[in-house]
Image (tube, rainbow, N blue to C red; front, side, top):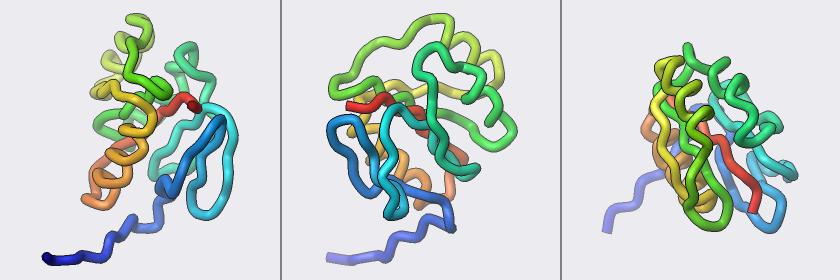
Length: 117
């Protein structure tokens, strides 16, 4: 087995999550979050496409965490984000957190918009 040290290039990554909260870089944040190399911010959920669109020059796609289970997102949110040239990947919030960390460690231009569990 080969073990590699993971590097996140200074960007904050998910260290954990639980009912209503996330832990990133040793800090606990409550509620829905938008996480990217630009930082960690509260996210207004499915009605807040503007926060994701504002990252268009920094990211290629966003991982949308829909809570404890994978679910659908409103079509208006998907259209707004895709119109800005940002790809959308929908998955459960736990999957989005794990996937974000992997892609971030690979140097990918990604954000995670996650609904708290």
